Amino acid sequence: MDWFAAVDIYCERTAPGFWNEPLNAISNLSFILAAIWAGNESRKRPGQPLVIYMLIALCFLIGIGSFLFHTFANTWSELADVIPIWAFVAIYILASVRLIGGVSPGRILRVSLMVIAGIIITFMATSGNDTSQSNPETPISMLNGSGQYLPAVCAMLILSTLTWKRRHPLAPWFITATIMFMISLTFRTLDMHLCAAWPFGTHQMWHLLNGLMLGVLLQALIRNTARPDQPIQLAPGAMSD
Image (tube, rainbow, N blue to C red; front, side):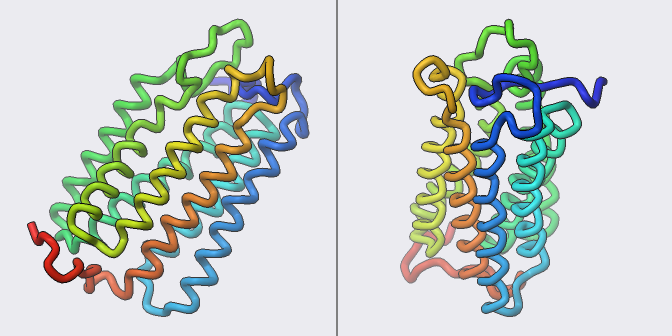
C-alpha cells in the first residue's frame, strides 16, 4: 500500500496541494465545536460515565482526521479520517444500548460482534467503488461513496424508531439527529454529481450538518444519563418489552 498515494474524490479538489479544498477543510471546525459543546455540558453534569468522554474525544478526532484528509488528501490521511468516524459509530451504538436500555454486559458483547460484523461487511461490499476513487477517469458511482454509511443509517433509524415507540425521552434527540444525517448524506452523495453546476461542491455541508448531528447525539446522552448503573427510564405508561 502506498501511504502517500494521492486521493481525489471531491468536487472542490482540482489539483494536488494542502489548501486545494479550503471549504472542505475548514468546515471540519463543526466537529471541534460539537466536542467543545459536549465537554462544557458534561462538566455541568458530574457523574458522567467514562464512555461519554471517549465519545467526546472521538468527535474531536473526527474533526482533526477529516481536516488532515481534506488537506493532505492521501492514503494515510484517509485512514485518519475513517477510523475515528467508525470508532464513534460503534461505541455510540454500544453506549446507547447500555446506558439507555440497561442491557447486560453479556448481551453488549453479542451486540458488539454484530456491529463489528456489519461494518466489516459494508466495507467489503463498498471497497474499491465507494471509499476510494483516486483515478479521475473512474466513473462516479451513483452513491458517490455514501454506501459505506449504510450501517450508521440503519442504526439511527432503529434507535429513533425504538425510542419513539417506547415514548423514550431521547426520542426527539434521535429523530432530530436522524433527519440531520439523512440531509447531510444527501449533500455528500450529490457532491461530485453537481460539479458542473457548483464547482465548490456540497461536501462541506456534509461536515457542517454532521458536526451539528454529533453534537445533538452527544447532548442526548449527556443530558439524560447520570450513571451507567441507572439507565434512562421510559415515560410513564410506555411499553416495557
